[in-house]
Image 1 (cartoon, helix red, strand yellow):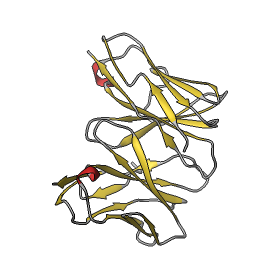
Image 2: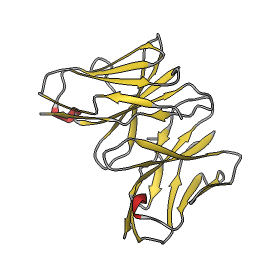
Image 3: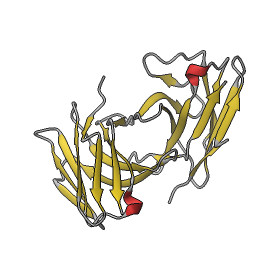
Length: 115
Length: 111
């Protein structure tokens, strides 16, 4: 099956620093990648949709200047949390489509803790 | 919010029993999918049911879809301790790639 990886799997940073999370499709070309955020014991909330070579589309209420998304190739998208604060601590999950049927393949997630 | 609702929020059953989770959604859909998530981990895709299907089976899983009621159910038969996880439904509308996730059900199987 299609495999999506994320790196790092967890990160702890100080308040005010920026953190970059990578999402890679390992065995297929991802035309679209999605970024989700999940707070403890809650569901996944879509943050943004990213298409290769174009600007990401952000969901309402998500600050595009705070959550920078770059989809530079068909196998890599990055999410940068700029000037992170403790309220940004969350589980960030990416997914990718590209194999037809609009099926999304999910990465294992990245746990961000901001001190 | 367009997020779907799932019930129950939490469910604890004895190993070997059947577990049923329900999902309701608000808009017309292309398909509905069920996912499992172990604590602190990523999502595992379980099953997809299209809007023109009413029931689908996969191993110990049985999914039903009632588009007139905008609801779906996931039945896990002969539950095992390894089934302990959170289960989410997610809907995909027509002409759109965005999945909308339900609120989830936390299932605990008691050995």
